[in-house]
Amino acid sequence: MYPAYPFLALSAAIALHTTLTNIGTSDPARLMGKIPAKLKLYVVSLFVLLALDISVARTIGIVTAYRAPFQVYGPLHEDRLINNEANVCLGKDWYRFPSSYFLPKGMRAKFIKSAFDGLLPGQFTEAKTGFGFFPGTWLIPPGMNDQNLEDPGKHVDINHCSFLVDSYFPNLPSSDLEPNYIEDTATWEEMQCSAFLDSSQTTFIGRILWIPDLEVIPARAFSRFKKPHSRRASPDPEKPTSRPRSTFKAPEREPGVWTAVNFKRPTAPPYPDWDVHETKPLPYRPFRHGPYHITMGLRTMQWDEWIELDNHYPRFHGDKKRRIEDRGEKCCKTAPEAFDGAIELLEEL
Image (tube, rainbow, N blue to C red):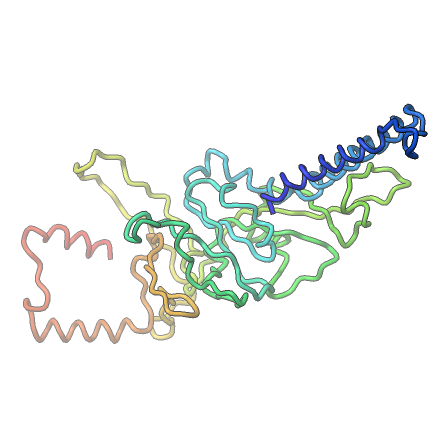
């Protein structure tokens, strides 16, 4: 639509010029030529001023009523969040997401499951090499189709979300797929709240134009549009990212230089209700729904998720134990120069 706007403006200018030429004629043989010039000037001026007033009211109305989706991303640009790798998730308001340019470097827009069952936008690859002369946005994102069929591979678990954009309209009921996240203050902390026009509670004129807040004029109804910030809930062994992040940061060093430092690993929080015979393996799925597309199943690893035990551990451990007993050093051997590192690894485990 954007390329059409200059031509619309040009057509309006040509139409206005043609109309003014016909109105401004002084030919006495035509009807317009018999109308006094001052009267025609007043009528034309009134028309132009009315058009300008409507245009300004329309512009102000759009800006004041629907600017919330552009405002809520402001807190993400604070110094404490700059260069922080995190997921900014959208649910039922996915179609109001303006652009990834509103997010700081390192943050990515993700979608959680909502009542919408169509095809969500895809993410362009950020790879720069290995795809010929046209990497990046030239490549079609996986899972796309021309039938508006849902691709579950575009959804992420809400426990992988550091930030969540959501709207709240009191007259709209919540559901299992679209709960009122804004009211869940035990899990989410409010960072930004902006007013958003509630079209179901606003008259037709109030939806298309700005109108003053006078008692004789029906008021425009606004609801809340927020970006809450996560306050992580209790850990869940089936959702590893719900556990708190480690505060450890490696000391800065020159490239190629390794300096030994004294270090003691922080105590890891225990799994709730964990049982070596009952806890099932965590699901890792490096593939997408639909046509087979192999993907790199890589993601940022939390320290407490390095070694995860489940009900397969006794069987695997028994197999390894028997294998080492049968083959000895042919199966497992520690070189003398790596002995200190092996001891450190065992202490870490």
